[in-house]
Image 1: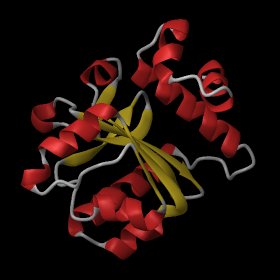
Image 2: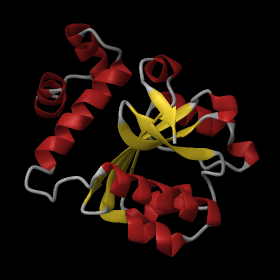
Image 3: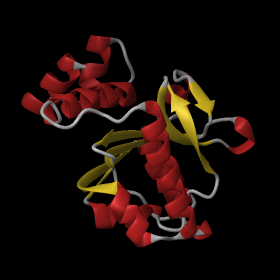
Length: 177
């Protein structure tokens, strides 16, 4: 995590160039750097809530998304929340625009923008344990097609990473809740 973070954030080395150094895919390296970044940014923040508390926040987020409750979504998101989307999810969003899906950008910042992205969505998403941590997944037929890593601090979602890369998802332990 530290190596990916330092090389990318401090020296602007692209994830594609870091991947062979750490023996991971570029998507996985991006995730490693993101985790390290969160650790650095939130070292003095309130510790993450327990598993039951995380689950309540995630399930409330999914419910508010499904119901199209913008105010409820805002109440669950940190004002400076960041949504990071892998390239597979961006491509999936472009293909699904005709079905009414929003076109995703690689990064979406701020509670109003992130809430707007999820508003009226998440109909098939469910809370899940992702590598032992509460998050969410879109798993039609029980097979995860997209995974949402959610970082929660002080009862608010501070970051969401949306991963749809099948190779990356295949390396994850995803258990529907």
